[in-house]
Amino acid sequence: MRCCLNCADNRDMAETIIRACKDGRTGESYILGGDMIGMKEVFDILSAHTGLPTIKTILPAGIGRLLGRMSDMAEKLTRKPQRMTSFAVYKLVRSNESDSSKAVAELGYSPRPMAQSIAEEIDWMIEEGIVTIPAVSAHRAA
Image (tube, rainbow, N blue to C red; front, side, top):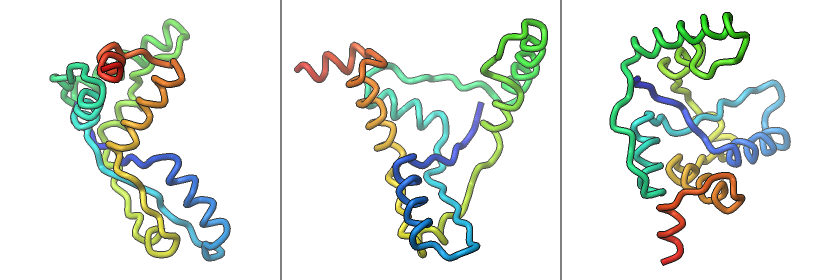
C-alpha cells in the first residue's frame, strides 16, 4: 500500500509548542510538520537500525481499502476493535503534506530527520525492555 506520512518527532513539536506559547503571535496558529516518509522508507530505516530483514511487499492501496472495509464489518460482528479499519487505511493513503515555514521562520521550528527519531525510539524501547531484537543485542555486545 503506497503511502506517505508527514512525520515529526514529538520532542521537536513539544519544544515548539512551548515556544509558541511564549513567543508566538496572539491569534496565530502554526503548522508543525516534518519529513514526508513512505512506509517502504520506514521499513528500510527499521531494518538498517536493527539488522532485521526489511519488508519487501507493501499492499496496493485498493487491497488495503478492501481489507479495511472487511475489518470494519468484523468489528461490527465481533464488537472487538480492529486495527486496519477503513479510516486507518484512509489516513495511510491520503496526502499529508503540510507547510511548516511559518513555524520555522517565527518560532525556529527545526524538526530532526525522521530516520534519527526512529533510531532513537528503537534504542529507547530496547533500553526500557519494551522490545527485544536479537540482531541489535548481538551487534551491541560485540
